[in-house]
Length: 249
Ligand code: G3H
Image (cartoon, rainbow, N blue to C red; front, side, top):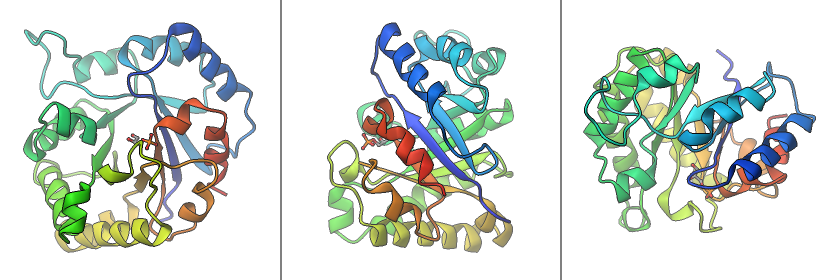
């Protein structure tokens, strides 16, 4: 099955209402390939989700950057999957390395979050990736396989899951993975899915690359056979995000 290219913009904890409106205007005015060719998802901070959803062109979609692991309730500061569904937010990013590192989200916790979000009807961008230390010690594939396994153990349907391979050493550092490095890990992730989940899931599940993607390096990365899109941080706040979307063709 052909995998449709997907480009996500993770705005992280950035922006004011005015700045967010400017980015949306830039996106709305952009000429990009059609939705049949590339799926575009932008992920503003929670407080701007509705604002962005209401202003954004209808062929682009919105994602939350996180949601609570189970049904809502007495969990101060959290936002539940049900709330996102209630606001017609279709996507959520889970397991981002910043949350894994800064908020101690374990592989198992991320697996539970993915399963619960899917059970409520959300589509999930599930992030995996190794640290520099792990790469240098030769454990990259073992690390991303363990992160993926923790998700695979909790879910039975991968239709609404996109994996995002984001090497921690490449995030926000300007040190993008080389096309060969990205392809190698994407290939291994797909192989892991084939061996452990099934050939069909392996063939159809999209794997985005994230980590210092910009307008200059996206084209070559996009040409790799197992790179099915990008999860973009810093550059998603800038006009070059449009060039990254266009790298789908
Ligand atoms: O979710 C996005 C990634 O963390 C990549 O961020 O493009 O700023 O390196 P970056």
